Image 1 (cartoon, one colour):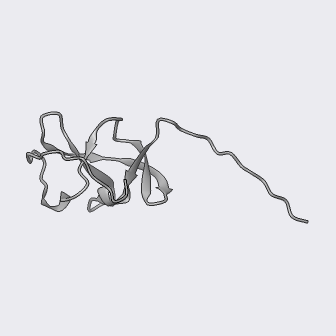
Image 2 (image 1 turned 90 degrees about the vertical axis):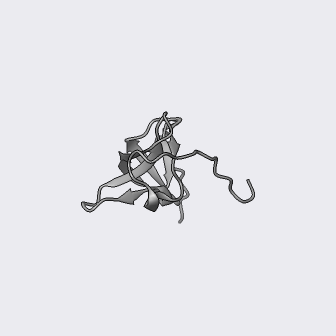
Image 3 (image 1 turned 180 degrees about the vertical axis):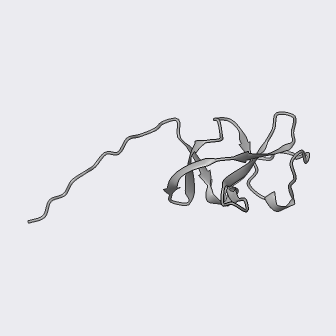
Length: 93
């Protein structure tokens, strides 16, 4: 005999999923990302991650809704670097 079951996990409508490409780790292994501050400067933000969902990380602490994340070019950044935010365009979107 076989049984087919559907298990519903908890759903968090306020969850933040961050592409794994945006997350780096420091020398101690702590995850961080770069955000654009309100005055247009790069700011390093340490994160608390829960788990990977596909190719994204589920962020539990460190970000709030509406913040702009730096997706590319993070190797050239230093805290306080002036940046210009441009929306990411995805192929087929």
